[in-house]
Image (cartoon, rainbow, N blue to C red; front, side):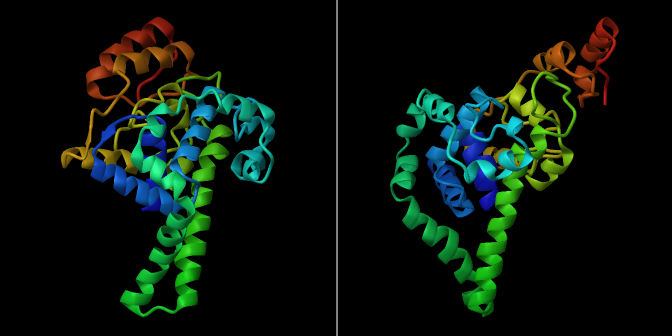
Length: 271
């Protein structure tokens, strides 16, 4: 739940607006994002928008050029670089400032965090399964927090250091299958930084991205709509123009287009 609050909520919906959501879905996403304990939606989305606009520069909150530890968790233990503060003030946050749920969570974050991230998950095993308080606190709060936090942080560290770059070889974000496995699809990072508005965050659809599946499930019940995608032709052309030659995944409908590009450019392959 808390993981999807970050990937589907804070990231794909609130930061990038890759789809539109009903009030009910927004309420669920706010609840789950609060449970994750990664600051309020407003701050998370602001930092992420700065990260995309100034990726891996001194204005990036978790600049991967400062090393693995810094991009993984060190940035949360350090004072922000002056450029992070300066550029953060220039980011358009009007959409979130106009959202009453986002404002409510920001204004009451501490109380909501205590009740949703600590009291609620710890109380469930105690009430339903007669678990001890200490066991429940250890597993449902501390262990869960450590796992979810580190899974999220791998996107900023591992996926900015190791992996292929089939869409843009000139940036650090990379395609990292391990990170995608740990984060329900957030590790296809070269694709995501190239096409940040695409709700799928990858070329694979739902095959390797659990969060994409949840978004499509929400769409099927009328809670999500206007899902944004990058056109296949744009994906192919960008891969040919700036990719590192790594094979890209395609559907049968686009194979002919790519084969033509292969002959013209001699490096992009089908998978």
